[in-house]
Image (cartoon, rainbow, N blue to C red; front, top):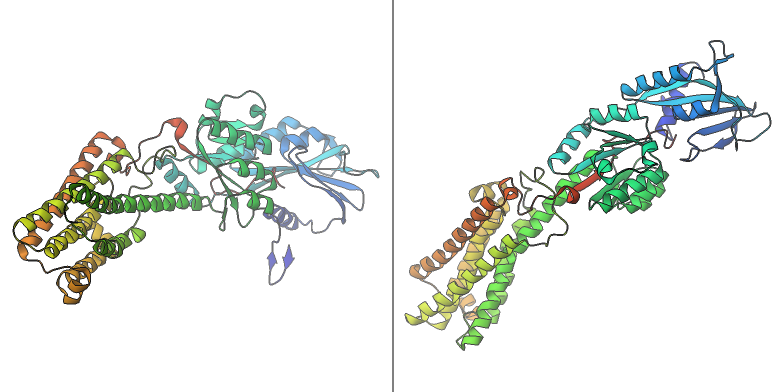
Length: 515
């Protein structure tokens, strides 16, 4: 701590809190340190040696009690140590969601810190480290989204249970001592809070859940978290309080150290994935349909319904202009109330593939059908080809409305929630009108003006495509419960395939892990 227009904390927040507490109690100076024994998972305590030979030790209550022979009385003189009373007081503090550290002192008598001297228990320090306000909401959202949240901490079991309850992680609490023996994967999967866990046990927990088929995201900030962060499918390190080792081992670094950021990342990731799938489902029929039309014309030995330059026009205008809204399409309102997507599923489900093939078939039939209709009724090749180009353009326009939602109808609401949809539709109509009626475009692309009857037939093909896809969506929605819940084509996963989040509710690592 230093003073510059008031006291400020630099360094570890827990150390700063302890110094603040000591200063308030009137302890503002101690002999200078001559040696420090840092905390590690095997030793489970931190010790400092001072100029006067005094050794101060802090760590978890049960570990410090193992090292102590006596306790300091009111006057500082040694008295018998009542371990049961100390343990009961620590349990009581833990039940109030307080993080508890124990303190002791001894005299080195010229020895170093490799082995602690006989220690005298000094007392407990209870700290309130409340979860962030939005941690409980983030946990609830994750649960609604099918993401299981587990809290892994070095805190006392009572503290871990109380903090877990505050953020919505009710259920069984398992301690590191239980993990040292044989523990079933089913019990690990059912447990929501793990207390007094060592780095090796964190790694083991990740591996157990991965062996069960889960996708693991692990959060952490300490050096001891690095192995588990590296092993997890997605390692998430804390940017503010995280150590360099944690950041280097992680796949993602949170600049705000907030668990709610992970929930937002899941939501954003689902939105990006949805928009990518929507665009692919929308764009493929145009390419497949154009390919089928050209192949069918070659096989049948008839004139090409659409020229190569006109294919280029469609790809450079209709596909580009109508595809733009998918990049800014808002997230579905049900996006965080559906189960996770099974990573073993293909990008396009059978339901989506069926829609793509249905629209491709309609484009093929509509293009060939109207081309022959126009030629049979005396139209020039240019008129027939212009009709085919507009069949593709208008069918892609109506199919755009089908793809704004992959599981339910979304017509004018789609335009209201995404203004770029309306802008793209108006732009396409203007471009196609220019293509059809502008003389210089007629010369360049061999297009020709169309009459009202030709446009009516084009609109019928586009409308039929829209209706067919909506009927398919209705049938698929009735057959798949996930789609009725807004699942956007994702089937519910079995328990072994559900996504897993492993981390705290916005709560930093406990001081027993890194004092």
